[in-house]
Image 1 (cartoon, rainbow, N blue to C red):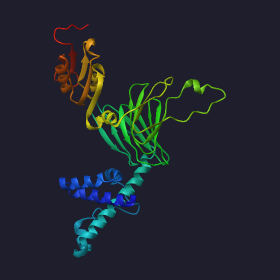
Image 2: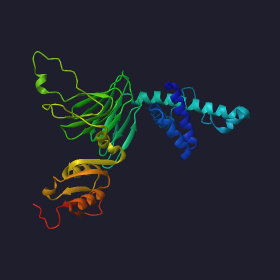
Image 3: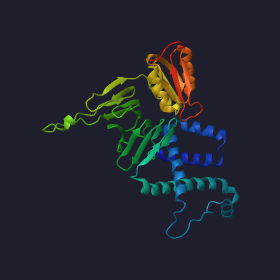
Amino acid sequence: MTTAAEIEAQAAEWLIRLDADPSPANRAAFEAWAAADPRRRAAFLRLEAGWRRADRLRNLRPLDGPVNEDLLDPQVVEDVVPEPHRSGWLRRLALAAVLAVLAIAAGLWSLFTWTEWQVYETEPGGFQRIALQDGSIVHLNTDSEIRVRLDRERREVVLARGEALFTVARDPSRPFDVRAAGTLVRAIGTAFSVRVLDRKQVEVVVKEGRVAIRPPERLLDLKLSPPVAPPPLPTLSAGEAATVGAPDKELDVRKVDSEDVSRKLAWTDGRIWFDHTTLADAAAEFNRYNRRQIEIADPRIAEIRIGGGFDATDPDSFVAAVEQSFGLRSVRINPGDPNREIIRLLGPQGSKSH
């Protein structure tokens, strides 16, 4: 089995190779290498992030003098290294330099950010893929915000609003905690999504592995005398989902087959799926992803049930589909203004709204 050190060295080589030659052929070869082992992509993303951060350290200098910026200049190498050995020596030197710079950058960077919260957010219709320092990956959905803090003992994420999918790098010594609307979701190495539905409800979907959930504290339990030991935290396994409600509500756990999990997470590919969903709920889901809002003007059509997949940022295609399927009409308010336009859905021609 390939060791972590070997994967790190290979990732550094790819970082050098792609920086020197980002051709489609090189990129395809890299993707093939990364796809063979999930640890490879995580290592590459971690080194790439460190390399970018190293740019911020250019103003730091050794205590005993300035940095020689010409150390890796090709002319300097030609003067020092004989021609027959130059190619292999250059490759080893470049690899060693990358690893050394990244190690120094990671160490210095941790001094400044070890306990600081890092904030990431998206606008309506936006999407962000975030590689954390521990190798975990976060996919941040539309109109969402997270705060992240990693230290030697814990990994903490606060989902302030919206939805995120977490693919967690395994580290039994540092549980990965996500807090959302008073609910705590804890994982060690797994993949799961968390969505804040409103101020009192959180939805958790487990794609891989297991997570433990601690619902919001129940005030009645805190007043018991003598104190009662808290029950074990409920856990969810792959293929399960839960809706966590207010403190006085029970945890609602349900089975979700792999196809439904894929549909729930279709937003990672820019898609949203409906399955026997009311038109009102479908419109609300589209409104999460777009500044142009869909409005149901006739309450009699709000309960129409629809299904199918759509591009999350293409409300026009959705509206055209329901118009054709159900004979509905639509009018545009403030057409052409992406920040104020409203697509108002009406009942069939000749019907009256109330």
